[in-house]
Length: 300
Image 1: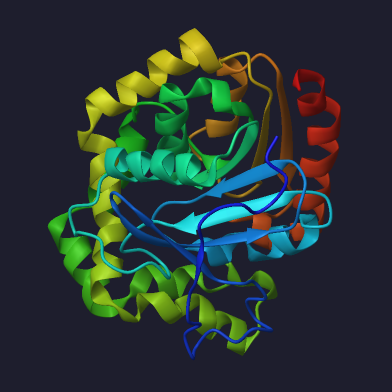
Image 2: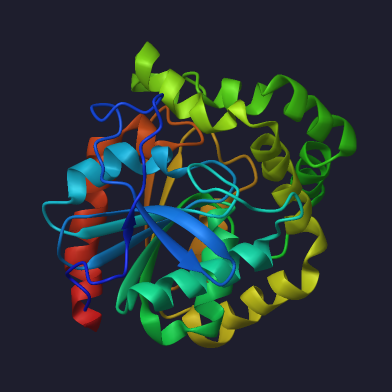
């Protein structure tokens, strides 16, 4: 179990728009074969690896601050997202999954519990499919981990990744702006915190990549099929905790996770939206900690 910080990290300069009191983490950088990433590595203890795709690590801020007294909490921004430089506008879920594997190897992580949100679910499971021995369990927050099916889900992904919406998003920044409100991460944010969350999206290229990841979820059928196979063959016995907002599971993702992972536990955040970790960080963190203590410790 990796409880301490032994990775070849380099300090990363803090942007002026990201005050320390708003984002109270030491920013680290590491060079990987697929590019340079900026990441957070706080606390000591069992490893919780927080994975997102499209947004940035700010969405896990409130939960990480509540768990670092018991766990080593790690999260990264993929190349071209969040605080990480570089990246191509053609970033795909398989590319992010490879980067995640490089990152886990570089840090020498084992006995990992993955905490994934949104497209971070497919990203993390793509990595776990190739290295299942490194993974002890999963926390899935408003995410799915299968080939997109159903008219509603496919229509939503198709619309949000269309050329028109991608261009509109790059020009207006409408998705991050909506996300910064009470509907997204902003239920408990003040003006300075909301401005910090929006900081990376000053770059239109980062806005475009968000939309193109949704297209990747539709197009990369070989990749998603591999995830499906890995869950059925090797990962289905892992403990899983699902945490969803009450108001944001229109496609029934939580029930589907329960059907795929027999050893499951579920929490619904009352009046929660798409970011339950920001809507109710105390409940989210305590539920993860209690579940980890009762379920994951039995497998170690």
